[in-house]
Length: 261
Image 1 (cartoon, rainbow, N blue to C red):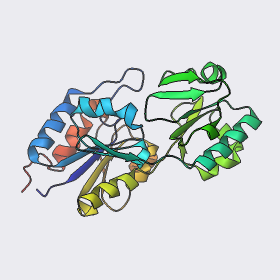
Image 2 (image 1 turned 90 degrees about the horizontal axis):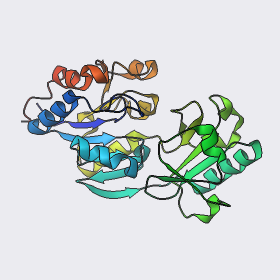
Image 3 (image 1 turned 45 degrees about the vertical axis):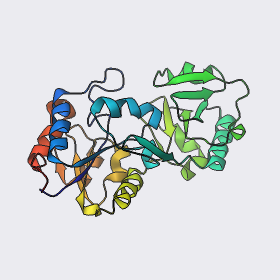
């Protein structure tokens, strides 16, 4: 077995149960242990910010991570950097949201806190994903960097936002969507270039449409059994669900538990 570079999404791939009741299946811990013993490189590949993902990285026993939708990189437990969103484009989107009455929030630091202008965001989002802090007179122009934005509107209403077409975004909740980098392949290529390793030695594992960016023809792609139809259509192999030992079964099928030569 040649050494492989394995990149795993978190939610729905390594972690089961959804946001409200998430847990790590025992087979995931066993898989990670055996892959380490075999000698492969392993990293998380997540849309989550560093601050929202680092605890999972440690709990899962990883030391490497592509995070912030591909625009953040951590190697050997060292944060190498995070590229923020285009501030001018985010400010333009927020102005349009104000015009159309859509509440919004922003993340301006590498932490688990988002800022909102008033109580309307939480009243409509009903969300506990991260700590939400009201900042009276909140103005995105007052901050040097904006890492993520959150826009409250029902599924489909985002089509009203002309400025959204200039920004990456994804929806995990019907009440609001995330404006965040969405190019995991960008971060994966940075890792491979860092090690001067060929892209063909990459294997990625994912389940949701925010993983479509890393399901490219440059490398091998594994979709979970619980993955979206769009992701399965681009996969080289479809394994079982996350809570039915899907990751373990895929690694066994691919022979990844064999020692690296």
